[in-house]
Length: 313
Image (cartoon, one colour):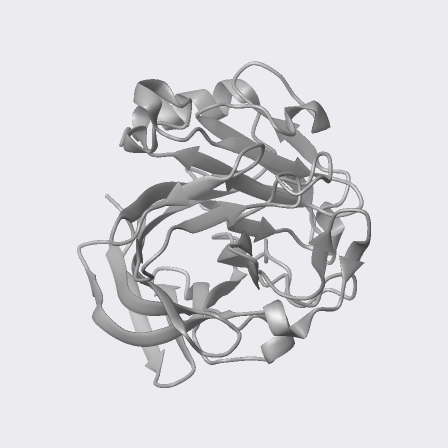
């Protein structure tokens, strides 16, 4: 049985989900607006293992707009809802504050914890730098499957992130990435995780191969393991596509590719616009669902596969 969860809501700031057996704050979901240059948007940080070790980073000195786990849009019809400098082909990254937009929190439809599951249901408005309303998002974040290790130390838990983004413009929205704009191996956009500084050089695993060569490939899951600073041991973070994401592009649906790095920092994104732009027509909705499993220890492919088989969608 999944361990019970408790929610604490600091209104106007954040929602914290606590695992009651060990008293560990598994996540804080921060929706307080931050610096305009960093493309204000809600994010998850810190995110912790059941052994109370943090597996996200916040405002690192190389990219101040990297904040834990967050939904991003690095190139959106000429706007940057990612934060910081904007990639311009032939000019590298440039400070273009007039392109930096936001994902504004509008309200919560659900904030509950019961039967070993916590739910945060939120409405957001995606906006141009000048405040013009471009899209609505219905977001749902669920924490579940909190399972302690048999030894009593550590364990695993899972976060499911669902986003449904509806174009409110009278013209199409074009989702892209630095790679769609000319930079190789930089197809980041969509859900993005920044790992702690200590996770640099960590292990990257997929179903069939391993290492940085997974950049730009397709697979139903990808896992990243790193070793902690300040505490003995490792943690593994597993990222999964939901079956309905159709990440392989079957049936004509826009395919997804993994963005992943372990140098010069740890980062993972199941990018929905790595090589090619995704066009969203006026009034249409882009829906994606992902799972992020946070586990204590450096899990190998066999253990990851066994876990995913025992925890189907």
